[in-house]
Amino acid sequence: MTDTIPDFADLFSKRRIAVAGDVMLDRFIHGAVKRISPEAPIPVLLKRDERIMLGGAGNVARNIVALGGTAILIGAVGDDMAGRELKAQIAREPHIEDDTMVIAGAVTTEKIRYVSQQQLLRVDFEQGPGAQALDALDAGLVQRLADYDLLVLSDYAKGALSRVEPMIQAARAIGMPVLVDPKGHRYLRYRGASLVTPNRNEMQDAVGRWDS
Image (cartoon, rainbow, N blue to C red; front, side, top):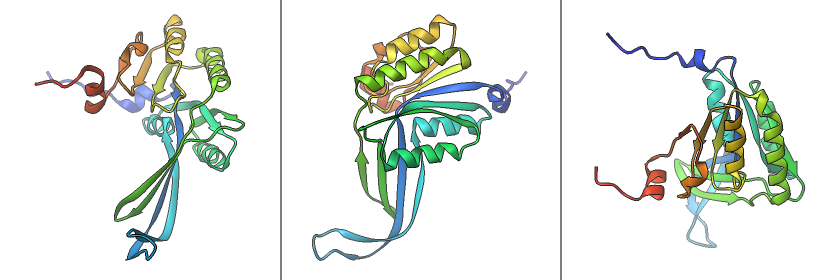
């Protein structure tokens, strides 16, 4: 008797999956390097093209859609150019619902990568959400939990999940499964989650190295 491989399209189709966490904008600037700068010993990148895509929790939402589900993206962005570009990217995704809130004065998390055959440099812009933004995120999530089938918490340590414990408790109180993509070593704050999915490095941060 052989094991049956589940059809992920069937598992995810018609499911409304909330993805809460650190939403960010990924920007890739591609070009060619043909000389070294006379100002400093660094390569000069002649820009050829630019690509923008959803990063962080936004990329998780895109993966859910690729598996046949509908994703509701929950997070905070700033009232800045990167925030407007990020929301425009969400609007282009027909199966991602935008539940991100715009916070005046905040800085949208953005990663800019300069690439010529290989990545030359990455520039990060980030500023964690303040207490007012976290209050609004918590209240909005709890208010709409009944609209979802599953809660995915996507933690990139940028601050949106600073208060992850009450989010997990609220979801489990109504019997909703909670999946966590973790960050850092403080795993006790994920207590109550149905599933936590660290990679090897994230697991070592939490429990230390192992021999086998």
